[in-house]
Image (cartoon, rainbow, N blue to C red):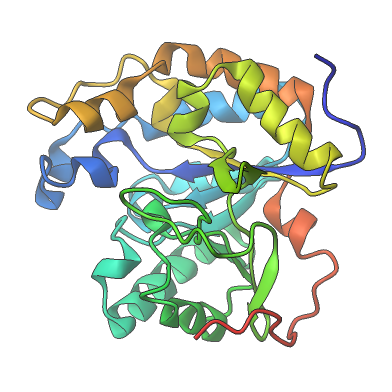
Length: 293
């Protein structure tokens, strides 16, 4: 199969969190125990930075404030390599579990921390577990008034933990000065199929994932948004005991193949940063095009 058509640049994004911080493990790992866990994120992000350098690719790192506070040099290294530092919130709390006031405090705290370490404005935000949807669209108002320029938090799929399947599939304005850039889906048989990475990229054959991204680039002439986590390239991470079968399968399936697949993906497509792809033609303040409540 031929590589993707040249000229369409896709966004390569990394959600910087560690294995014990994923939402599926929340019932099994208390937040108060995080500091006692072996943290492997710095090592894994270092490998990702090396991989990106080999492919001469710049990416966006949606970074937890919890990680940045404990590994400040990691944020500095990401920024120094020319990558975008964006926000993933402070402690990986789902937006749907927060009040509006608590969410605003969370994003302001994280934004200030990341900007201080990177020396650059933080323009982007991605909600933990894509936890902005129909029930909490007030979060978009918070992001707009706290100086964020884009969100990548509303996943237009049906999923047992998140998703807003009727939301637009590609970039759209939601509030003055704020655009939503959804994770990529492929429209097939009247359904949006997840085509943007994460566990699906580990589960699906690589050829299928590549084909779906090619369809978005060639047929729809749209830039794709791909995401993954540093723990997904780490098959030697400590195993969490006592978890349910579904969570264990989703988390651990094909971890050993992930680094090789990412290498192929970086070679098969053109990649860049979220801000440089999706904010290039956006004014600082714009009129909303999608009137969500």
